[in-house]
Image (tube, rainbow, N blue to C red; front, side, top):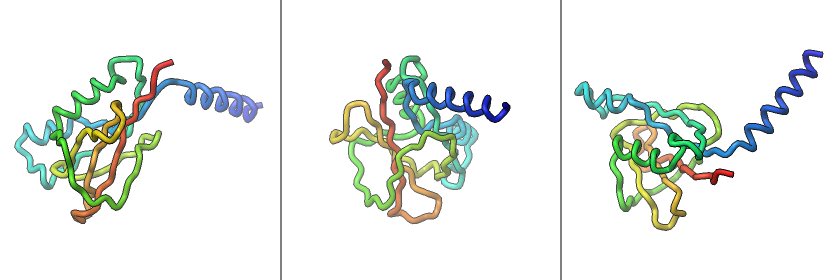
Length: 142
């Protein structure tokens, strides 16, 4: 009986999660702000980001809200020339990604759709030619 209830509950949860309008974003925490305000060395400090699922219908889910948050933390570049060897879209999970604070770039690419942002993050292995790409895609509200 418990197993049957578990299956029913899990099935309902999966259906609701799939139908809910949402999109993912690499969420920058306040750790970078704390590092910079405390006079810490950004080159050796580490910033953790969480992949977060947000609703598009509310303020916390609007693309403009996310853009403002990113712009206050990292520089915006009109053009970036990179040799990209690894590209990973943001998954629908709460996994953490670690990278150096001073090696984070963001820009809007004219080749991409209007509602997409791309974030380049160098991993901490000091290989200057290897970047990970994180994309933010907006999903319309129903």
